[in-house]
Length: 94
Image 1: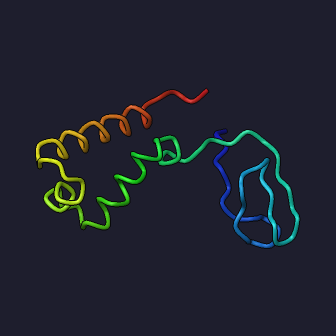
Image 2: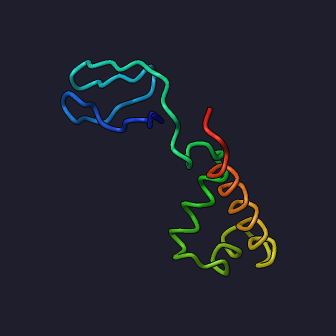
């Protein structure tokens, strides 16, 4: 069975922070090997691109203006990111 990274404390439902995993609210600590969510497997730059893309309502034109790049360059960046995400989704679990 694949373990997934919990995002809330099972004891008090406060947000967990990665260390092992520790809830600062009630001091519950969780240890184990958990699969990271797909978006956390991307670089910070790729995550920022996704956030900016969503905030731009998916507009490559707006993204090109924000980044100071041509539309085709931003389109290629998005295509590369889509390819990486598809590769990560299809990667066998260890």
